[in-house]
Image (cartoon, rainbow, N blue to C red; front, side):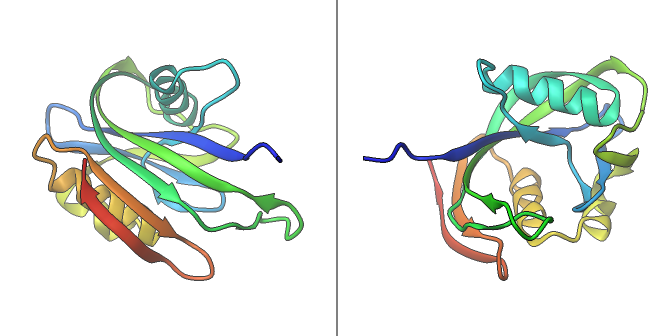
Length: 160
């Protein structure tokens, strides 16, 4: 039996005391909330904390798990050669506790955006769908199964 290969990732929706959401502009994905892959030996909370800091310069504390998502499609990476495996992603609601806005090797801009204008900037359908989960969050964790390539398709959505 071949061992399964999945990417595990974590995203952080960071809202400040004025109701602004932290967004970063990525090289390939446009405007998104910060997040990325969990590294070997790293737990998911440490991963989201690290990714937010690396991509935006902002220090956070994690307050709630908001959603668990499976991207069950596979596709080619931006190089057109590398296969991208399926992914499992955990999205967390976070609060800023310090740091200064910055960019990274993965981001060309970072900024605070009024909550009501986030969907005006975010174009990726999966990220838009996941951010809508945040806007509707009532304390119940959402689970979604979707594919992003060749086009976004939501296959399953339910409370867990």
